[in-house]
Image (cartoon, rainbow, N blue to C red; front, side, top):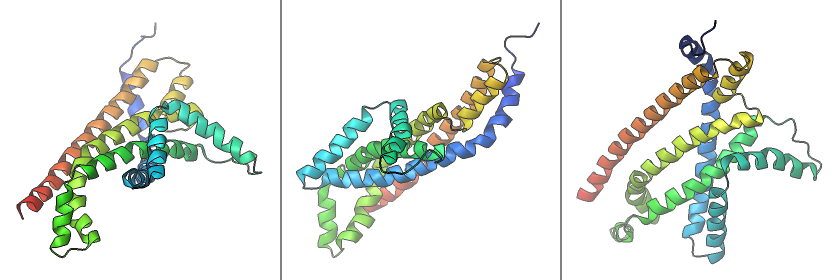
Length: 235
């Protein structure tokens, strides 16, 4: 009689899953890139003097943060082609990864807008004024004084947001993206749902290693930038 739980399936599954990390990293990387740009734009709007810009940015953030990732994913995947078809454009042949990237870029942008805004506001305004008073231009003051300190403040939240994105990205298999999660489900389907537990344990191990590696990377990065911040304070 075949054993219900067989640990060898865990060992065998890991090499089968690892090649599909490329797609997971591609989606996460592009989502972080476009999401950070969007977050910066939203943060500028939140810090602007225009009440309208502030309301739009805060409204966007509220709506996106209150929308479950899987709901936003389906809205993007089915909604964008439906809207485009009304203008005579067929998007049914667009790669699934594009819709996944759009979804998580929109979501990551909402998170980053708050990260950037709070990091900027945590820096004493007097430092900017002092830098300008000694002859630095506005751009130089932001680049040399404000930005290095804001980065230190933003790094922990940026790292946490990245980890959340990486985990939420596993939902992309629900619309057919074959990333590491999608491959795990294909393996399970190929086994007629047998040994699903072992496959998911293998998947969990990969995510655990990735999460710990990313966390340690950001901790070291934070220490490096913190040294720069200490130098700024002592000069």
